[in-house]
Amino acid sequence: MTALTAVRGMNDILPTQTPRWRDLETAAAGLLLARGYQEIRLPVVERTALFQHSIGEVTDIVEKEMYTFIDRGGDSLSLRPEGTAGCVRAMIENGLLAQEGASHRVWYAGPMFRHERPQKGRYRQFHQIGVEAFGMPGPDVDAEQIVLCARLWETLGISAVVLQINSLGTPASRLAYRERLIGYFSRYKGDLDEDSRRRLHTNPLRILDSKNPVLAELIAAAPSLPDSLDAASRVHFDGLCELLDGAKVAYVHNPRLVRGLDYYTHTVFEWVTDRLGAQDAVCSGGRYDGLVSRLGGRETAAVGFALGVERVVALLEESGHEPSSAAPDCYLVWAGEGLAAPALQLAEELRRIKGARVMQHCGGGSFKAQLKRADRSGARFAVILGEQEWADRRVQVKPLRENLPQYSIPLTELAPWLVGQGIGDGLASE
Ligand code: HAM
Image 1 (tube, rainbow, N blue to C red):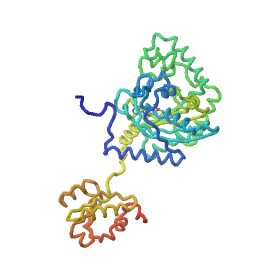
Image 2: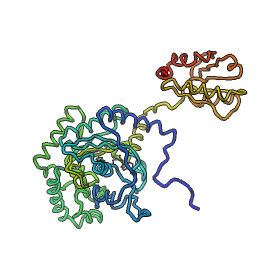
Image 3: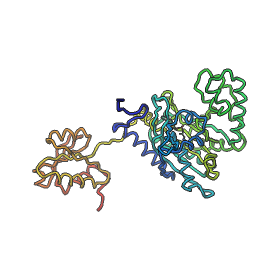
Image 4: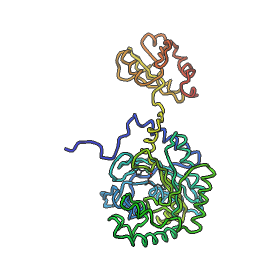
């Protein structure tokens, strides 16, 4: 029998790791909420055709990385390799973009699946926090999203990221550039590798993304994208640069940045780091004005990005981020005849303190053994309830982190006493 282990490239996120994940999720959700982005939850499985029509047939993702299967009804379905396609589908299908001038800001978080070769920072199940805005054609919302990312790094104490931006222009200027690239690379067809030759007429922009060192020189000398931009595309890009300058967000204009998905127009951007080896993109996105109409909706401007949660968490770790504590405030130690119900009641009462974390000992054992557990839990106080204490309607409170004496406190005064010690945010009113 095959060992019952996890699938390669699909990781367990253990309790020791989740506090950092939560810190990132909490910070991102707070910044998004503050800017009017609303959460949307989407299926993990979609029709394969959705990804073919949006990400593009001749992309690494669709050509070789999707988890595709035929379900019992005979439909070809795929685990989502990214969130934008499903989000656009949902917006159209639920009529959210049906009215002229409709505008929406949404975000989502969850697992994505790509059958890539696993290595540090690259997994087959990975997680994204994705952000999409619909119905706003100007560079103002591009800037809003990029500045949001900058605030997120600031909030999390991440400094090892650099912003790269570029413009792919309108579909027409992208097409003109495509033709120039085909002309250029055709002249050197014999020097191209197999992948690039195959892409020459289907997706020549992707040749620019090739990591093959043999092609580096050829790519460096290729026609540059900014020269192919039309006036409107230039105005959009200059507008974005001006807004980023005004917001004091530093960026590098990388004219070779084309992104691996076909739906982009105008702005594309990537936050990259040199701290995670080969997997340098921690957050990427751009504008995709043509996608909503391509998938059957009305013509709608759109822009978005997604950050790779594993990669941002790795950066947090690398930058020495201290994860928020998951330790309880109090650990209730109890033993004695007939005390199970009062102990449970006491724990529930203490949990009425807003924001307090109260862990009740379960599983029996001596006071000594329970106190050891209390200490290991990281709790600040052990609250001790024995037969004598219960008879006196009191508890002992033992500080576990400070060198202080043990207190004896009447049950009725315990909650206000703990609040007085700075536990929780105050007593919840009935
Ligand atoms: P993407 O560049 O394919 O864009 O992925 C976004 C981010 O997901 C990357 O920057 C990276 O941090 C992370 N990522 C991608 N693949 C992996 C992997 N195998 N393992 C770990 N992390 C990974 C998109 O997915 C677009 N939907 C972004 C977007 C939203 N554009 C507009 N709206």
